[in-house]
Length: 152
Length: 152
DNA sequence: GTAAAGTACATGCCATGGCATCTACTGGGC
DNA sequence: GCCCAGTAGATGCCATGGCATGTACTTTAC
Image 1 (cartoon, rainbow over the protein chains, first blue to last red):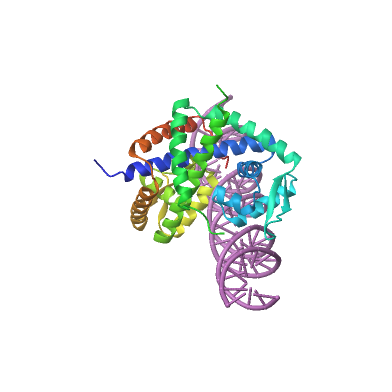
Image 2 (image 1 turned 90 degrees about the vertical axis):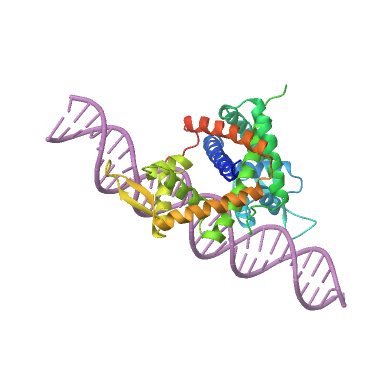
């Protein structure tokens, strides 16, 4: 049997193309409906679901640099969706949490995403489940190995 | 049975996380070994494999704006990897093709990617094949619907 | 043939992210 | 207690991409 290199690159190509187009499409929809973009929705959603969430926690979750997240949180704070509270356990960091309007926004935006995704994901429930299982496994492996994390 | 919205968002989350980390990891490896990044490898590879490739063809393939690709091709040209030849069929556009060193670079970089991916893709050949099949189908559906394509 | 509409792409401005640096704070020796 | 290595994150500089615009060329309608 031939080398699997070809198969690996084909997988990556499909993965990247699907991700780009879905991310762009959701970006567009979120922007027109709620005035935010996907990266902001992801941050808001993580803050909502992560107890005692700090900047570094967000950075780790989305495999972005701490600097970029810090600036992103500045913007979310300026919009009035997020607050930085002093962290009683460590005065170097802040605890992030959503404001009332932030909570409302993330709930609405989540609904918009679910709806748009349901339109776009033109695959069977079985395919969806199987693919999610594989990607989930791959994701855990990459996260465990600290693969692809920026420095800052 | 409950709504599938949750499943859709879970799928997207795993998809985006895998893509980000793999893309970052390949970026790092390509940068240290060949002085290029993934977006450049993708462009070089497309130019190599697409007959009579124009800027707009690249933009369509990677779902990016024409402006961004035009600037990217400027950089590849400045590095001596790509040439713009006048398109005899349409004087508004150019035909893109690789130089000798560009050909060599893309071949080497391709090998680097295959190798690194083989290290990182910690899933069975069956999972790989099944997932590629589903993503490939999804990709065709998104491309057919012109989903998630920037304007420029 | 000519005018109008459309297309290809080059370019400018702006927003965002990476990386390096700086500051403030923490925790571990001693 | 004090010092020093390490950590959290804020900030600056730079590279890249999106979108808007400008220009050259092509196609369509008449």
